[in-house]
Image (cartoon, rainbow, N blue to C red; front, top):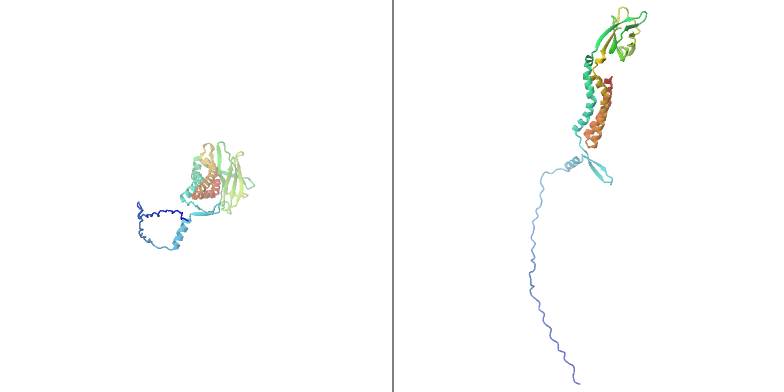
Length: 283
């Protein structure tokens, strides 16, 4: 049998060329350089931890620490106390309280002279078989009784002990005697409508003694009104002083000015004293 298989012709493999160089430039790799790191140096004086703690406490002394609504501690700055605010908050109510009183105290000693007071003496007559002494005194308009007292002219020192005074209102007056122990007792009265002075201390002073009714009077039409105006204003200024003290206290604390607030509080505390003095001067 003839060998009829056909030879299969194959071509030899082609060689593969491996390039020895790459076109283009590759990025250059830089060599890392060493970096010198300097060690920091501390300067200054060494202080103990106690000094630092004291400084921390000084810094927090002006703060008040409270618990906030979220449960966290909150630092609230406390406003400083300024004495200038304190003096201002106190001096304004003080001036309102006492300035009218001071003016009244200055004017009062001169008030009688301006008002035209005149002093007179009337001798009382003893009623027979009694210890009563009487006299006559009556004023016509526009004259008014200013004040009165009893004077006993006697060689007996016992009769001249103590002193007397009158409480007068309108056309009436009541006479009192105060003994050496300070006890006051009513011993007489005067009524302008009747024009009669009546005095009875329960003692017969004898024929060698004289009893005098000393009094002062003035013309009401020539009355100087400055003192009356000051007296009438005392109640108003006292109330105004209390109101100003409250305003100073509330506004001071509301505006974070504790000095102003405490000054107003002090004004409130002195208001009763000012009221008592005002009542005494208004009589």
